[in-house]
Amino acid sequence: MSKEAISRREALKIGALGTAGLAMLGATNATAATVLEKNVKFDETYDVIVIGTGFSGLAAAAKASERGLKVLVIEKMGRIGGNSVVNGGGMAVPNNIYQKKYGVKDSGDRFIKDCLKAGLGINHVELLETIVKRANDAFDFSVQCGAQWQDVKPAWFGGHSVPRTLVTANMSGSGIIKPMTKFVEKLPGCKIMRRTKFDDFVMDDKDGVVGVTVRTGYRFNRKLLSDDTENTTGDKKVFRAKKGVILASGGFAADKVFRKLQDPRITADQDATNHSGATAGALLKAFQIGAMPIHIGWIQQGPWASPDERGFGIAPLMTQQGLFKHGMAVDVRNGKRFMNELADRKTRADAEYVILHETADAYPVAIGTYNTFPKQLLPLIDKALHSKVMKKYDTLDAVAAAYKIPAAALKASVKKYNAGIKKGVDEFGKPVKTFKGKGIEAKGPYYCVRLVPKPHHTMGGVKINTKAQVISGNTMKPIAGLYAAGEVTGGTHGASRLGTVAVTDCLTFGMIAGENI
Image 1 (cartoon, helix red, strand yellow):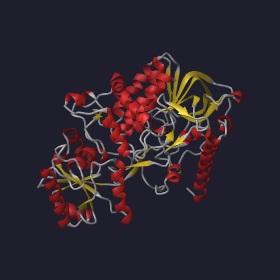
Image 2 (spheres, rainbow, N blue to C red):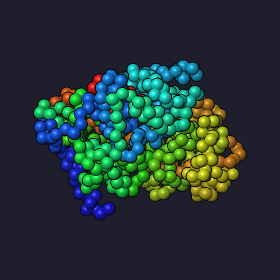
Image 3 (cartoon, rainbow, N blue to C red):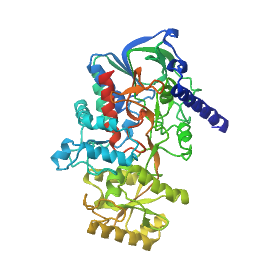
Image 4 (cartoon, helix red, strand yellow):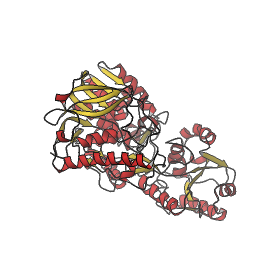
């Protein structure tokens, strides 16, 4: 890809944001729109059109269809689910049935406090309050669709003050998406179209959304840096949406042009946990018709990812509830711990970045022994070893030699960490006493994963209210006929999303959008 080509695409995206800026300064939505109702002929008509087939999109489609509405769901990729399929299947639900079953005390206020701490206090609290009210409804809905969940004590993920995360039986978001897809496809009047790319909104003369232009038979080009105007694959169609459109297109962490515009530290060659179709095209079109941008520059990095595999992979499963919980992470340059392995994602990713910015390729290493892995992760150990993202060593000397860590310092760090667990007080504030940390066994084998932060979740997007209506930056009122849910929205998570709240957010506001449109 030439520098000239990259610059051209950057210019296109800057132009799109410029249009959004004009809308916020007072230009009408119709001024920015490229497609007006009076200028098109509709090929097909539906009550509701949903853009995207992740948690939000499918939940919205289901709820709209259950109301008797004729629903079309469009997906630009060849398979359904987007990032929702490749995540770890964790859903944070305050006051859930398994917390009550296993004696965990929680509250909505505590959940919101945890989210605000991770989000640096810039979260839009009314959206968090809505999640608290509807989180258990969203969980019940997933079960209604056929999702299966582990009947164990809820998991304790970084940044949470209590264990409240429920995990699917297969430890993947596919455990929700696959049954939900079957559920939606069986609903009367509900249709899913793959390889159908949303191109633009169709607007009426009152600045309301009344349809979309799409391309059917679209082929996404994974070699491109972002959504690309030169990709003209597919046949152009125009679809009417009598009740409105629900935007559930997800985030843009795989959009190497747009994410760099927001945060120049994220280079084009930096791997992301997202699927390749997680780009900013649909979001930018919403900005063009006046949707208010919120928190666009806040891009969360996953601190539990590894440079030894592409994308999300298996490392996050082994680190988050295994090596990070009962083991420890060390700076390979000096053999010392450098962070609370159960802090919120931003805190941990920032700590890892300090090391990597000072010394290129000095990837920190997470270390633990067999006892660090909960029973549900034991079947995955061989898979992680076979993929070589996790390595196994008989002694700490072997670990030190493999990663060029000062052996004496590494042994001292292990000893200090174990001593802290015995006392119930950790030097970095890890709540080892509360969750009864196991520590690192005196004898091996030792299991290790190299760590690198990867762009994972984009906090920013369009502003919505508690009814999932998209707010105009021009009028400060809802844009008629436009709703949104999930990662394409902004404000809910503030500066950094608390781990496993995404599934809750997406399902909750997807349901709300489908109920209200």
